[in-house]
Length: 238
Image 1 (cartoon, rainbow, N blue to C red):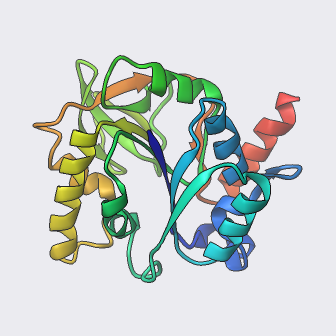
Image 2: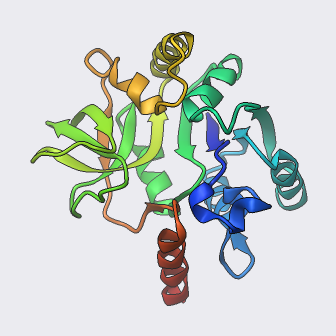
């Protein structure tokens, strides 16, 4: 199983920190970066094969991986249009490398090994992390759920069946193949600024995506408030 890390964004809401480094190399505690938190936890499950989608500062990510995780197998796909497109286009560029079951996560997501275990050990072939115990955050992804099945994903969803979704997916080869086909349709229609989840929504009536429930700390680091929250979380953890 390969792991796809979406790291092609410019991280403008974390400027000026991200003016000279990629968002995934922002430090969240001592000498630990967002990328370190992800890789170290994934390696605990012998997940050592990665596709890293990059935008600006790819060389810094390559050097970091080479220095700290030399035993991992990493394929890099650079999105030269990172400042004009969303990660839907980055995934499209990587489609020829994606030919097996995969884990896909946004490159700014903070998660623990417990959450990886929930996904990897789930009996559901296709699932994504969902937390129904907290109010859905305004700026983050949400899912519309019925009987533990996800029918719609987006940032602006509202309603009683809407819950917080952390964008960390486990999907089968067949599922990702159909998602990639839909992404290609979006790209061919120049819908390259939309979310990959917009393309995903087009197949959720046919493909079954189940909720993998969690109630642990998990958040995307979008802005300085998020970064402060994450740093405080790790400070209090010790």
